[in-house]
Image (cartoon, rainbow, N blue to C red):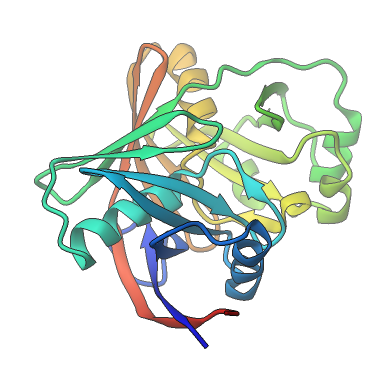
Length: 270
C-alpha cells in the first residue's frame, strides 16, 4: 500500500499543545477529492492541508475539515509554509500558494520566526434580527454583523467584554442549524486590541482553536472601530493563540508562529 508523508504543526503559537493544530500532506499530484476528505476525517483536526508544487516557489493548496473542503484557512496555510521552510528545506523568502476560491496567497517569514500571510479582506455588514443566534450562543450580543464570501457565510457577534466571550457555552446543535457556516464572537481585549472565538459545527469543527481566516473579517471590523491599521489579537479558546494583523487595502496581513508536533507517513489506498 502506498504511503505519503504527513506533518502536524501547532499554528499561531510558540508552544507545543497550544495554538491550532493542522495536518499538512505534501503531494506529487492531487488525490481524488474523496480520498483527501477521508484523510482529513481520519486526522480529525480542524483542517488538513494538501499541496502540490506548481513551479518555482509556487504550490497549489487546498484545505479540508473532517467534513468539507473550505475556501480559505489561515492556520493551515501558516502550517504549510512552516513545513516547506522548516522540514523540506525551502529557502525562498516568499512562498506563493494558488487556491481554488481565494486566489493567490503569499507567505513570507520574518527574522523573529513569524510567518506573515497576505489574505483577502472580508468586510462584514450589520445584520438584522438575530434572536436565533442569541439563543444558540446562550447570551445576546450587543450587535451582529454578517459576511458571505464564496458561500462561506459567517456571523460576527460582538460582546461588551472579553469576559463575556470567554464565558460563552453555546448550544452547538443550535449553532449548526443557523444560516451561516461560521459563528465568530468577539470583544475588545484587555492586553490585546481584540479577542475572539469561532464555532463551526456545521463544518465539523465545534470550536476552532485559532482561526486565521476569521481575522480577515475581525481585523477590518476592529480596525475601523479602534481607528488602527495594525492590531494585536488573541483567540481565547481552550488552547488559545496570538495573532498580529495589519490592514493593507483589500488585503489582511496576518502573522504568527508555528511549532512542529509530528512527522510521519500515512497509508493510502492504491
